[in-house]
Amino acid sequence: MKTTDTLVADIYSLMSSKEVPEGVDAEEAIEKFGENIKELMRKEFTEKREDKRTLRMSNIGRDDRYLWHRVNGSTGETIQPHTYIKFMYGHVIEELLLCLTKLAGHTVTDEQKQCEVEGITGSMDCKIDGVVTDVKSTSSFGFKKFKDRSLAIDDPFGYIDQIKGYAHSEGAREFGWLAMDKQNGHLTYLKYDLDNENDPMYEFYSSCIVERIKHVKQLVAEPTPPLRFCHDLLEDGKSGNLKLAAGCGYCPFKHTCYPDLRGFVYSTGVRWLAKVAKEPNVPEIGGKDDDF
Image 1: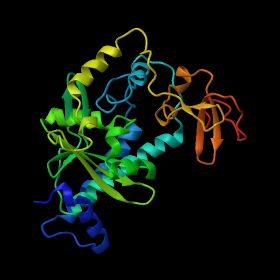
Image 2: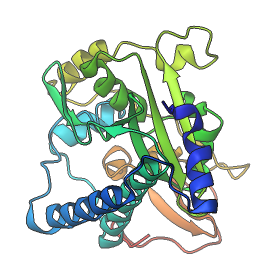
Image 3: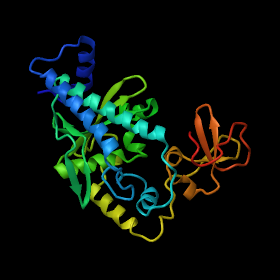
């Protein structure tokens, strides 16, 4: 029986040799990939998008203030068309990785299985070789956190609480991510184990998911958002300016939290300034829904 410990090496070997292991039905895996892509496109263009005000397993790990605004219908930024394309592209990559996993001789089960914890529901990506697994397409920057196992201490999108919910629903103690750097095709598999107290990252990922869910359900029922902001403002060099942390920069409610927020376009991307003591010598975004 293969395990996730050799998953990446086995996929790389498959890509180099094009030799499918004995006993693997390549045609069945390819057919399943095609059917999943068709279903993805049907869902995208024939079904309504989910209600963003709903607590789901996929968002339960997000910051408290973000969740309050989301569930209570605060006005956020409009999602741009290219962002929807990026989401779709990510789903296509995920289906590709599952197909390669099967062709490399590993077992994929429980695809899109419905899970529930304390009334919060969601659907897991799958189990690979029996391990509850999320499949992620990432930027090169994001990929590093899966590669060096530091996701536990820098998880702005709540991936850990999301997958812990799936694992808890299944009575599982270990879980992992098959991640791909979508810019260059590198793969890695990150696994955490709730029974491995010797893991240097254990203290950062071992909190109780049931308590987290109870806490979130209570906070979103409050009449006002949490006073504490999700992230502290950061000094922008020696300019005296204060910028948003990355987690706030991607948040659709950043203008709600910081009404005077200004965005400046640098070669490395947009820098959001909550305090401008010295005017940057770069173009400024004209409106909160600019296409950046």
